[in-house]
Image (tube, rainbow, N blue to C red; front, top):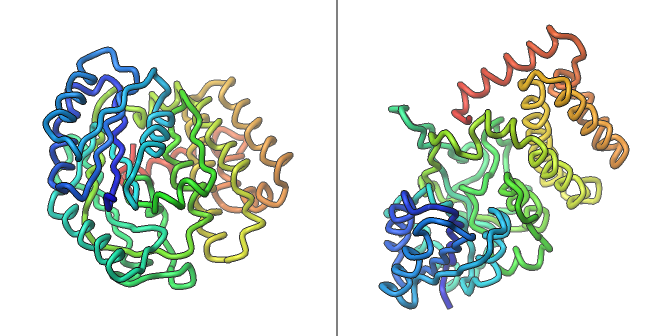
Length: 338
């Protein structure tokens, strides 16, 4: 059995997927690379088959009709044989030395029979034109190189939450968590991290800069103007997060607080994008989202609404909305996101 399965969702990725896959190949035969061709119209399928032919036993090419990012991730998970599972998007890549350290750690888990639910590592915002790349590390909150429970976890700062780039889940946990990502929907990476997290009891933090998260293409899904155009999909993911995790039922208070903070950030992002668009239609959608939360989970709604960010996001006046946007711009500067 492989130590690590890595799914690489690909849609019209011919221009950049080789760089991604080449970095993953440094893991050797302990890694299973699942290139998921998600109905591409370019040479992605040809390139995937080429890698599968050149690296049998390491690379597998999976071809499917277009199902979106979530559908591609789920296809990777369904086909995975590794003990652990990671997603690496086709325009991103990994640091080869860091991957070696990750595999050493996973190997140690197996030999010492200490299989944790979640392995966490750092990621780099590899933003075009920025000389000093922002690295998201977790050492202030997660003690290094030891098995942790939630009671060992400190406070994660704003902008420091665990994203898809920083997590490696145990494959069995992902499957047993009931996670099923929606098809033809962007921003499902939030569900990928959020929904299984409620099942995590043990974790391990390895302080290596593994994942390089590329930011810079104009058509990228995290580009702000693109996110505004796709705001309905952001709202859909926001609502699915509420539907799939009942925060009140989580007994461990630190896990509950972590997931609450994560949900708050996603709701703030949804709200600020609708404010930022400046259209009456999107302002009405923002109101609808908050009303939905109130109807579905009054406990969660009032907790969000009483917070500073909740008050800013629901400001009715133009000055209030301007202040919310100003806070968002400051966060962009501090944390390097789009």
